[in-house]
Length: 544
Image (cartoon, rainbow, N blue to C red; front, side):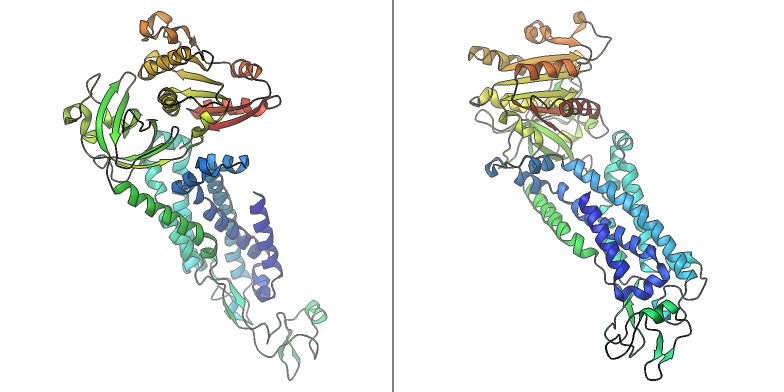
């Protein structure tokens, strides 16, 4: 935001004081400075909002081998979506100011028509309809189109609409290609004119002929007093000449745009070089499907996610899913768990309660999983850092448990990190059936720590938020006795739950990781910011 203020201020000052814009300022006044200042703010943010969506770049910067010690820099990478949204809202607000300033500019072009130097005018005659000035110019037409495209993109990106109709959001957001093309054309040969012959005509010269020294009848007393022409003064050898202001948008966005194109091209080549082979599918209770895939050369770390495309459903839509089990010595494949809740993922559901078949008959897994899948990634996320802290608190809501499941698989099949002291797993679900897909893994991990003489390393707390299900009606079987004992009814009191964790580890850096609904992330994040006195809490949340 400070950078936006600096850019606006510098641009405003330049257009307020630049001598080559003297005659243009006489027509437009401060509207010229405001419109150009907001234009550069828009250009700056259009460049910056492309950087967070360069997934390959952000994953590369997140690599552990770089040993990034700057917590602020890493925090910025971990909040790519928030930074992208912030830049987008800045573009929207600046566009609104830019639009209204140009409305006044069109009005001033008509009102303050310069009879003496008609080339500086955008209007063809005095008192011309300002609307005609807009619709008969390239900047005006492209500006109106930009307004329409931006309105579609922003309105469909509002969380209420995005969650209720993701397809509408996804397709409208693809209009960014049209938007950037229009931005590059918008200022090309624009209607703003600057003087090009400053050496031979000093702006504001009150004389129409240097030899006769005839004074312009329209010159004001201030002009005659402030401008001295002679051997040591300004020049007035010829009439001023004007030309359109050059297009500068490409200077702001060409670098990030080129970087984004290279990133997208690299992803396109890598993800379509070899499609993913679906090895098996398992239908779990709670409308969760476990998909085992294998792709040549695929490797990932716990906490990372992939983008999945199913051509038989849509040839354009890529949906993010966290990898719940990475390739290891026991299996070369990787696993995804898909919650069948939307119009895209709902087409994955199978009629049988449990399906496991490498041949994948169409009648069992639906038309999507019987065909090929493309997998793009893996890409980094802030939940990769769970095992880098001595104490980690993992808060999951519903299917948001998936990134933490990948870490539990790593703890089971690899050596426990020496720095790891304790992991707290707090999992909230609406019904007990949602616990079943991962109940065996959680119980086995807890038993493994007990057998390894580390009984306090893994602490599990389950929260059943449904008020209609009693302890007798829970779907957890007797083999899940550990989980049954750790089920709490209702939502947790974060002040009590997290304060107890902080009290058990005074003076320790604690990583708090959250994956789930936005309301859950906001609650946990708010607590982390309010209680950072004795412990330094590092809050991370997954957000695709």
